[in-house]
Length: 422
Ligand code: ATP
Ligand code: MG
Image (cartoon, rainbow, N blue to C red):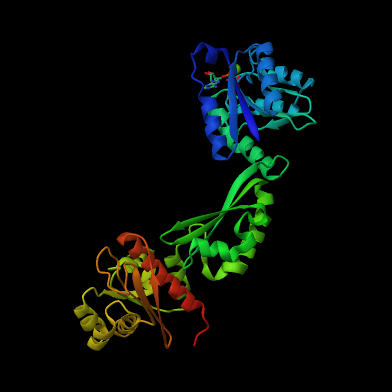
């Protein structure tokens, strides 16, 4: 929906009053996703109001006015706009009662001035927007085609109150009722790990491009490849089932590699799972130097799961702190699955945890040896009676390799947790 704002008042045109109402309306509506596409200001004369509102109505069919609702003879907004809609005016007795009561409550002498009765005159077929902050009620006038004008008071405090209390809820309810549901650009993200974007595209096959009419973007990063589905030209309600269909179909093909949605953090998901199952964790890190521990401890409540870790950088520390055997290091090297296995077992036993993760690799830029290039990284996952080890050739610069290694370790742990207990 597109809305125009018309602010009414000679004092605005003359520059004696700064038009804060239009700015406030624009900000409040934008916050609800409704765009003010044009705003204009006109004088107090009936023909000026009629011209400004008629033009705005022709462009958008949805207009908000402020000003000219008061009891004095320069307040002509309602009559002018009723005329555009071809409606007459009548007196609304509930407003009269309301005004009389306000007058009495204030303790003012005598009866309600006749001039105030002008405020009870409203267009035929309108709806009244109650004013909890002043005397002039607002007006909602709508024709058979659904074109509408909402008339708010000029006094900024009253205008703001009525907008918040009555008009904004009404506009947002109309939008969600679908009658005027806007076509939106909406996205869903599926987060994958442990698979390259080209391999993802291969596995997705015919779904790799435009699944179910959605566009699909591959967004690689150090945490993995995010799959971002985007819907254009649908309302939010129309997009929902299409997203559901597409994500189900993608799960079918590459669900193995999907660990979450949106902004999900793999470390947080793994922690939640372990906390729920009362499994504690120990870490043994070489090339990541504590990065994995930092990822995990960044999450509030991680102490429920993580007992501690050892940064075992030198071989001597791998031996003394984790019990990695001299022979293992000599035969297979510090970067090997055999060493990763003993690191994980040592950390689990010495820290006294249920599970352990280990990482040892060549982060670069130096340190590559024949058969072990930069990025060559070995992992160990100790869970239950089992120690699972594997090797990955991670790419990127030193910082990226280290971050990819931490993510890969978490992903391996998540997979191990998903397996039925052995
Ligand atoms: P009232 O019952 O007081 O006559 P009204 O709805 O007729 O209210 P106006 O007479 O147009 O409103 O304006 C009332 C006061 O609100 C004025 O003093 C004016 O300075 C202020 N005002 C009106 N329009 C605006 C605006 N767009 N931005 C800021 N202030 C405004
Ligand atoms: Mg006035």
